[in-house]
Image (cartoon, rainbow, N blue to C red; front, side, top):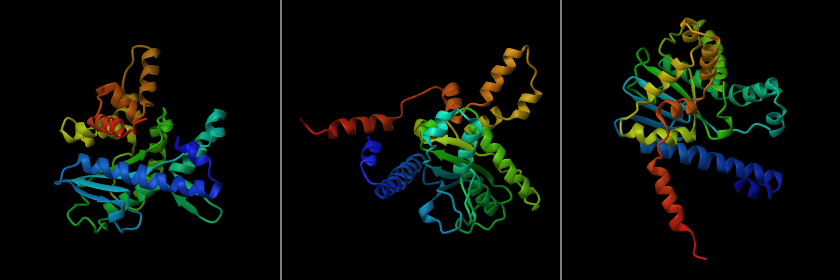
Amino acid sequence: MLREINDGYDKKERINLRQLVTFDFSEKHMLYSLIERTYAKKYFKLSGEQMSTPGAPDYYIRNGNKIFIFESKDILINASIKESYNFEKYESALKDKLYFHKGKKKESAKAVKQLVSFSKTLLEGTFNEDSNYKPKSAKIYPIILLHNRQLDILGLNKLINIWFQTELDSMNNEAINIENLRMPTIMSIDTLILIHERLLKGEFKLEDLLDEYQDDIDENRLKKKKFKNEEQLHAEIQDQLASFNMYIINKYGWKMPELFREKGISILTEQPSV
């Protein structure tokens, strides 16, 4: 419905409307509200608006030595590319949106490079807005939060990990210890809504879910495993391509969050009488 309304405006107004929807609703409202709803006061939390450090993420959470850094992205892939079924074009579009955009004059960092850059800041001990974190013992969990469910696709996280590793290789050359820097996990806003109450109740720990998922899609684990037949191997390869959302639902099932019930009731009670 929003897209139909948006299409009624001229091009300039459509761009402005999209920027408004992306930041004020998707990124600011949804992410900030879910984080505040999920994590207790004992967690150290900073929103992107509260940080002045160059390249700071959209949200920063620390619990002891565990640090979660969120880059929130509401991106779209051109319909003609999606419909072309051309993997190279699709990969190029994803790289442009999530890795870096190569402009005519300079390169613009996207989620992967942004997360690597800020992780480097943390590991070097130069993030002054959290005076209590310890760079040498901090375990850093980068998270790319996507608001478009059409990007909940097989293999995307594996691709992101490849790009991330490329950046880590250059950090190794700078003698930065990356032992406690985890690979990035792509999480849809739908998945965060799905699990946030179970995180709040202590049924889940976010770091455990992220570690379990990354271990599950780690190809090194696949190389060490023995398979009875080729079908079993192919099934395991398919599982390794699963998104975080697919992994969570397959392993833990789907449980309707109270947030859905609250908003559902709110929507019903706010409908004007006919």
